[in-house]
Length: 67
Image 1 (cartoon, one colour):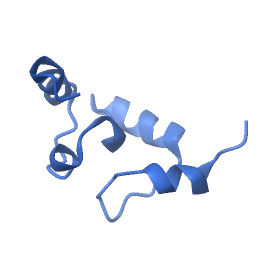
Image 2 (cartoon, helix red, strand yellow):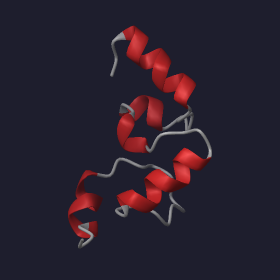
Image 3 (cartoon, rainbow, N blue to C red):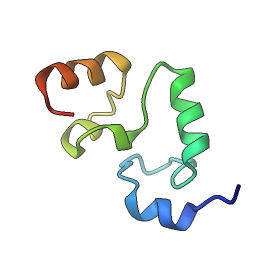
Image 4 (cartoon, rainbow, N blue to C red):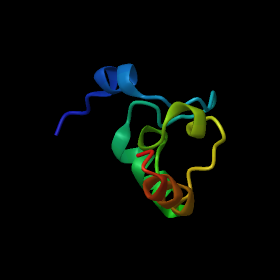
C-alpha cells in the first residue's frame, strides 16, 4: 500500500514541532499505542495542544460528548 503522506499532512493537527511521524499515520498510531495514547487527530485542537493524549483523557471527552 502506498503512503499518502502529503495528503495526510494537510489533515494532521499534531502541534508537536519535533514529531517525525507527521503524515505517516501508521507510524504515528504505532508510536502512540505503545504509550497508551491516541494520535493528535483523535482530539479537538484545544485538547491536542495539552499533549495529554491518553486513553483516559479520550474517554473523558467521549463521556462529555466532545468527541
